[in-house]
Length: 310
Image (cartoon, rainbow, N blue to C red):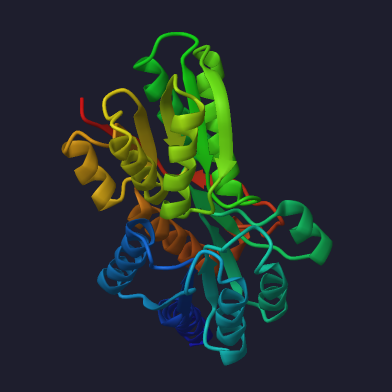
């Protein structure tokens, strides 16, 4: 009789544990939904959660630079007491670290998406997360720069339009592109941060076209800026003479490539980035021992692909 009772208790514990895991509630907080990249991540993650039967609430800041607004979203999620795990794509490497520390203290599991939390600041504030997934942004920039260089002769004048100053994704992409240009013996004549802004990128490209008459290619750290740069090229009457490569694989950029305007874009699978994060977060909540928390967890890479007219 005692053996039967013990077996029943074991079964109950296992079933209750499984039920608790299935009943766990999660939140996903993104930078924004103001671009195809982030909209695809938002929708792809939400659709996967629904298909998998997961209880997930989706949130996003108003823009890439809505630092305080995004922190308020995180703090509200923590204070609600509703979530066992939160996956976060921070606006930059530091704007949410105080909130991550608060989540740690509340026993909430944190997964980092796309933009890595600054490791030094995480250590300083004694904040941790259990995982990080993103495209390899250095590789992405390298792919774009390498492709542009393949269209040019050695010594050709090239330039890089960067995103927001201090943003790790932007810095990695720019560094990757510059590395590819140097390897191909290109002449990098200019590089400037344009804050992910299309109009600023267009104005910058227009200035460069006038300043550097031998400019042959521009790598842009996102597609919005690439669309601004290619517009400057078109207005200047140099379409076909100056090549422009963007990043992200936004629908308008891909269409521009098909139309013969934009030279290429390095397409990230943003939906899969979000899905990978959610899968990792769920696994970490269900099996914490397999996902040790740290200030800089190992990266889970998600592949990207070059989209060109050739």
